[in-house]
Picture 1 (spheres, rainbow, N blue to C red):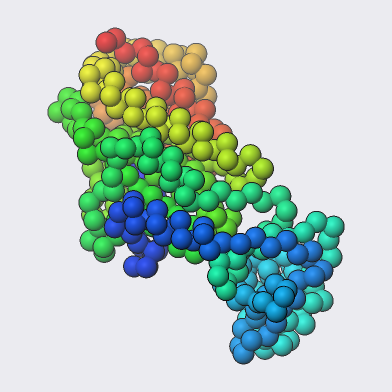
Picture 2 (cartoon, helix red, strand yellow; picture 1 turned 45 degrees about the vertical axis):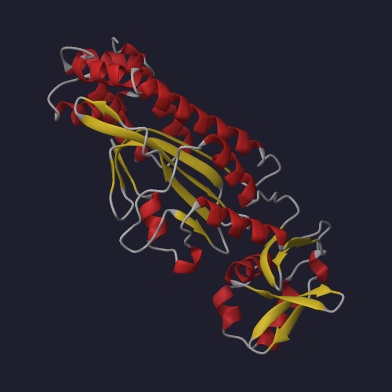
Length: 342
């Protein structure tokens, strides 16, 4: 079983103005952001920085300019290949001259994304924006029974949106099932950034407990998907929809079937000794070193049951830093449940 801390980490980095009580409140906020959003397409050599007191504004033409926030200023520094901390030590007039001399000319326009009088992001032409409202529409349509967890001790709700990104934590309080006296319920995290701060993605799971600090304890069947904001980013909505639909379908099936399978997996041994189980795992495509580590974990629980071995492999998968290997191992581990006799 895994301990998931994505929501916990979000909880302690969000300010009150980035926290929303309901999905409706979050939707209205994101919709307002979208309505106020504008794209501008200047050539790199045409970018003009205008000193305004102790800050720099970006000239948009027709007598209009917009202020830079921390994220768009950081992006501008990367485009100019200059150190952000160095620029912050200069006067606004000197900083404007630095950008005039360091922003390299290009053949493709830049994508300058503004909201009212502020520049939210600056990207190259290949960046493709996915609006938060499009992701929320998928959630609202296909996760109708899901809701935020209990309010955290700090007031956090699991529903967050700020200048740089959005994060949503939902569970289904009606989806609890009992397995050998232990309760599991479905939940998921989704995230996105309209300004390129992070990928768009989802992590679904079955869990036993969510504490007041929004740590998800004893999670099983953890599935994660993410995609960068490139040309086909809107295809990710179909992937996220399928993951949510699969979670909902499993919830409905598992009220009966999942409990039977897991109970059987908790009682059925993969083999009588470590050598037999090791051979079976290698036959299933699991590397010998990884299989031995999993057996070492499972043996501490007293038996080489299907559930103990799958749980051990899931734990090891969560420690792998490569997403491709994690996904492959998760599939291999889940396939072992097919050996359980219902």
